[in-house]
Amino acid sequence: MSAITSLAEQLGRQLLKAHAYVTTAESCTGGGIAEAITRIAGSSAWFEVGFVTYSNRQKMRVLQVAEADLLRDGAVSQSVVEGMARGAQQLSGAQYAVAVSGVAGPAGGSLEKPVGTVWFAWAHGRQVQSACWCFAGDRQAVRQQTVQAALAGLICVMEGRAANDWQQWLKKHLPNQ
Image (cartoon, rainbow, N blue to C red; front, side):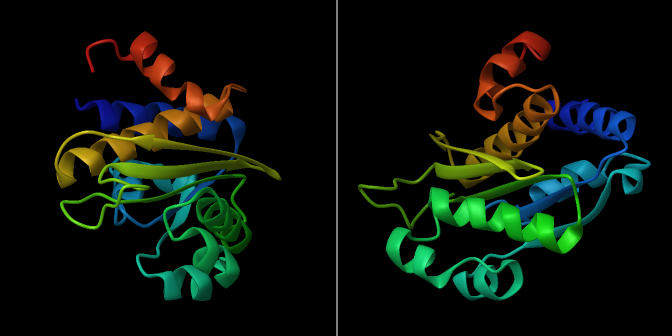
């Protein structure tokens, strides 16, 4: 079993136990987080909807991300992923949300935001945590690492930990990854 499948199973168990739902708002992963969640049998008990908003226009239109945030900070930014998470949560009614926006490559990077840069936001209720990482590897590797970090961060939030503890959580619970 892959690490991502294992993470999705554990997340599902925790959400089921909490009688809670999760939603996703994805850009650079193109639905990869939702796919990982829905590969688990019975996931409809904790997942109803995910949003793939690849363009800025759809981030504004569907998730109600503020145009001012996109113009000021760009799509790969803290303000935008936080807006994506809040928008997905509001539209879905889910207690938990994760949002990602990044530069998966091979092109599109800059000095400020090189290829591999990904912003994350994890929401629970009104609380939103966000963080930025720069992952190494090709497009597929960046996207896979993003999905893994998004799921592990959700598990951390459900356990009452900081979402950005996901790396330590992975080392402890999936040491061979």
